[in-house]
Image (cartoon, rainbow, N blue to C red; front, side, top):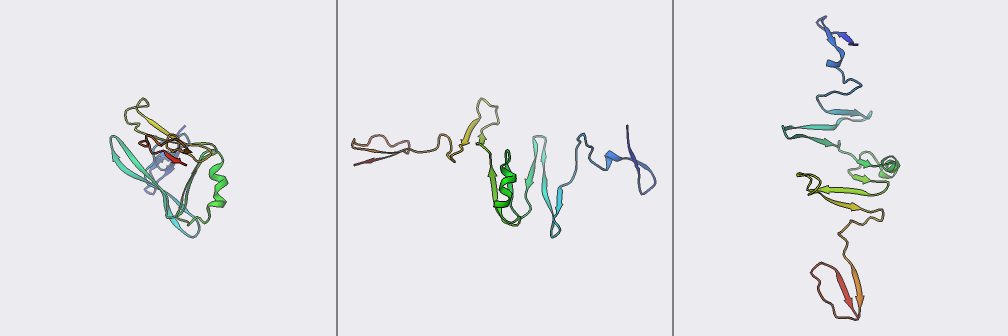
Length: 144
């Protein structure tokens, strides 16, 4: 079923030409927000080309992105909406993926563990009485 509205020139217009349908569709323009004290575009779309377009999220204040319940739980701790902070959170781990251009076979994943450690990027600090050797990998050895 189609729904119509009467335009200013008294012509009929399909309502989905004016509003985004509940079942999805393509919108134009940015997404704004009125907080009562400020009106601004929170999500801005950046024109691209046939390979893709861009998106910019933020409006001068804090941005909180989180998985699970983490984003909602951090809102009170994050401080004022005007705080110029970026908070990325996760209920468990946070994954970063790079080198995805040619598919998952070449992609590299770095995971921040629940302990806050980045996978494959923590250097070992060890000690002992033996003479140090190696050292090219960035690990630290303390001889006593």
